[in-house]
Length: 93
Image (cartoon, rainbow, N blue to C red; front, side):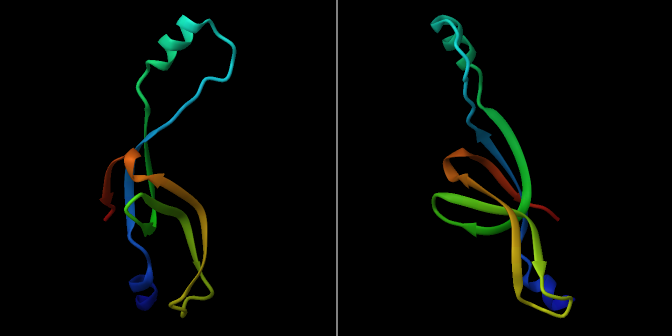
């Protein structure tokens, strides 16, 4: 299984700011007051499968065809986080 571990993408924790919305009818002043709240701080942990200038992509799970394979076959539950929303990212050890 050593070769599998060498091929496994890095496990990271990303802290990021999430957008949120208001979908019910409210008075304008009440809506403005409610939307003055801070963005939601989220933390997600996953395997880093793509890091570009404008985004990080992490996945929850990875799958190989068998224990002796060094080729990843499947990835599940991708989360695409825009770099402008990233507060911090650190390697999980």
